Image (cartoon, rainbow, N blue to C red; front, top):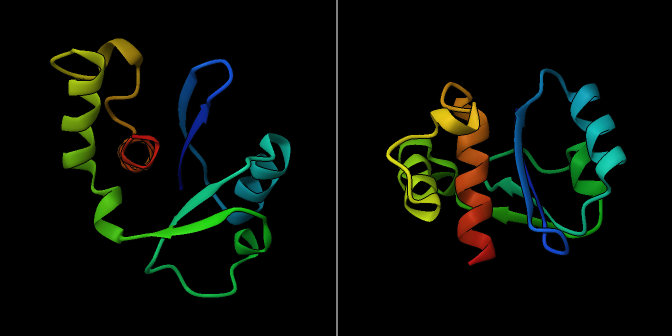
Length: 103
């Protein structure tokens, strides 16, 4: 799973990739986000949907290529190497969706 987190109060923006539902749910419990963006094509009734603030987004909002372009434009860079996430395909997709949602 790709996970992107934006803390509006501090401006902290981070990404990570997580393996497995249990690990994802534990991380969501730890972070306790006010809102959670998930792809609209995920099955209904997933454990993550029981959280408050769940918003379903179109699957293409998580597209890695358009997310990469948007993130580079936002941060004024040619690539994401300086952030150490250039190979985190799922996380980049999540970050692109989050960036578009935040705008």
